Length: 571
Image (tube, rainbow, N blue to C red; front, side, top):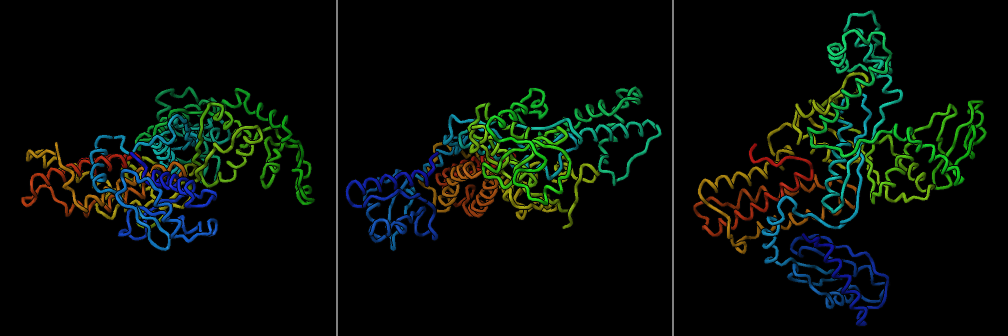
C-alpha cells in the first residue's frame, strides 16, 4: 500500500528539480516538503504550502513559485486534480476511481493490510517490562508492557525484523528480601515461632501471594527447609513469580523472544571489560568527589573513600557519574552501559527501551557511555512512560507490591478484559500521566472506546452473517457504484499507512489508539445510513456495499491487531 503523502512529496521534489533545470525556478536549498490535508475538506485531499516560505530565497511571489512547481509536476496515478490557489498553495484531489479500487487492494492484502517496507532488511529490538521477579505485574508496570509490545508491532508493520526482550535481575537486595519474606511466611504456615514484620518494614513483602507460595512450598518440601537460609526461598519465589509474570503478560498478548539476565554481565566479566575500555579512553578516574566538586561537596564527602567515576561531562552530561562505589559495588550505570554494548554487538539497527519516569536521566548516561566506547548512541531510543492511576468509583486505588496493596494485571483483566487493558493503557501519550478508569472500561456503550472500536468489526461481521443467510455474495462486486459516504471512509482508512509510518519514526505508539477511535467515528454513521440488506437497495448496489464492508472489516481487524486486541465477530 502506498504512502500517499510520501509519494506526493517525492513528486513535488522532482517537480522543483525539473523547474530549476528549465529555468522556471532559481537554485535554492531544497526545503522539507510537508504534505498534509488542507484545513477545509472542500479544498482537496492533500495540500503543499512550501511556496509561501520560498519567496525570500527565490525573489519570486509564492503564487508564481506554486504555479512553476505545478507546471512541472508529474501527477501520480492516484491524483485526479492539481490546483494552485492564492497566495501559493498547491492542492491535490484523489482520483475517485483509484480510491474505489482500494477496496480490492485492501481485501487482497488480508491480515497484512498496509504493511510497509520502509525498513526492510533492518533489525530492531524492543526491551520492555523488565521488572525483577519480586512481585506480580501491576497496572503501572503493565503500561510499559503494552506500550512496548505495541511499538514492536508497529515497527514490524513498518518493515523491521523485531525482537522483544525482557531484561531482569534475579539477584540483589530486592530478591534477598523476597526470599526472606517467603521464609517467614513458610515458618508462619508451619506454626513455628516467628515474628511477622508490620507494614512499616520496607524489607518485608506483605503480598498475600507469598502466603499462597508458602503453603504450596510446604506441600512440596514439608518441614525440610526450616533451617535453610533465604537462598532456596528466593529461588522458589523467583520461579513461581516469573511463571506468574509470563502467564499474566500472555493474557494480554505479550510474549518475549529473549529473557536477558543482568547477572550474565557479571558472570562473563562484561561490565569489567567496559570499565577497562572506558579507562583506556580516558573517561574514568578514581576520587572521593567528582573533579568539578566545589568546597561544599568536598566537605560533605568526608572520608567515605574513593569511588570510580565516569567523566561523562566531557560528553555533554551535567555531572560525572559514579560507576563503582567506594565499597567496590558497581552502580546501575556500569551494567546498563555493558548491556547496551551487548545489544549493539548483536547487530541491531535500532534499540528501543521502554522505561519508567524514574529512569529519565539514566538512559542519557548510557548513551554517553556507548559514545565513549566508540559505538553509535543514535541507535538507542527511549520511550518514557509516566505513572498510571487506577480509578474505581472516581477514587484512586493505590498499589505497592511490597506492602501487598495492589491491583495485578490479572485483576484488571478479570475486572475488565484483556482488550480493555491494552487499549486503556495505550490511549494516551506515554509521557502523559494516565488514569485507568475501571468503571469506563467495562461499559457496554459507545462511551467506552474499547467497545466502540471493536463494535465496528462486529457490525461488519454481522452483516456478512445476514448476507450468507440470505444467499447474498459480494463476489464480482462493481465498486464503481460506491458513493460519497463510502469514499469518505476509504480516505480515512488510507491514513493507516501514514499512522504506522509516523508511529515508527517518532516512537509514538499511542498514535494507533487515537487513529482507531477516529476510524470508528468515521465508520459507525456510514453503517447506520449505507444499507445493504434493504428492499430499496438494488442487488448490484447491495453487492458493492457488501464488498466495501469486507474491506472495512479488514481494516478494523488490522488496526485491532496492531494494538494487540482481538477482532470479535460477536459481542
